[in-house]
Amino acid sequence: AQRVTQPEKLLSVFKGAPVELKCNYSYSGSPELFWYVQYSRQRLQLLLRHISRESIKGFTADLNKGETSFHLKKPFAQEEDSAMYYCALRGGAQKLVFGQGTRLTINP
Amino acid sequence: GAVVSQHPSRVICKSGTSVKIECRSLDFQATTMFWYRQFPKQSLMLMATSNEGSKATYEQGVEKDKFLINHASLTLSTLTVTSAHPEDSSFYICSATGQVPNQSGNTEAFFGQGTRLTVV
Image (cartoon, rainbow over all chains, first blue to last red; front, side, top):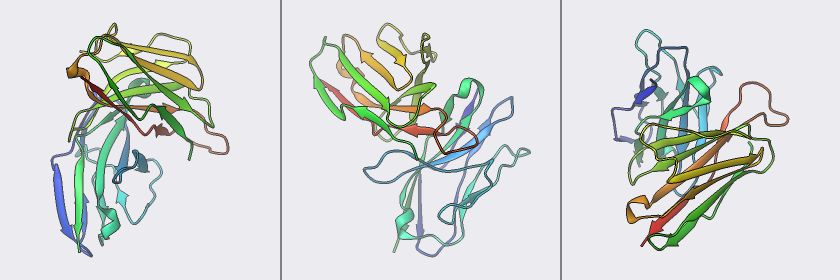
């Protein structure tokens, strides 16, 4: 079975501080991991995926198979980063399973 | 990125009636579409996966006779909530995957804007 866990429902940091949103997964096969973001009153959109190994809007995420984690990080938070963040895993049958989400608030 | 359009964005219906929600991929052919349900302040729960021209695959605990899914073409999938009850009130979101023109690499999932269903 595919499972994604985001332990923090809410995360609040000050502008300029580092941010780390945690994500752990459970999957017996070889997973594809993603981070999706949902800004206020907007639809869900892809932020980044592990296979691309890219940095988007200053965010990075590294897949750690030993710890089954895919934490999202940004060294210096900006106010416009305030949003809902979902970690997702794509396994069999192209199914995308989401974690519970973390609401990130960046305080000025 | 590609565009997925969901319609309607909001609907209010009476108990016992049926409601149809449409999900369209506007600029690519969606080989697979997914339907999710999102409760307030909770995550997206996958309800079913549909491939064009075949029956949908429902997740455990989702009633297939209650939530009818049709994926008749590569650009349209519909979710019909039959004999709706107040407990069916929720936010329903579709997503579509497929090969987007001028975009190489792995297929990405694109999401509709969601439909807020209120059953009174």
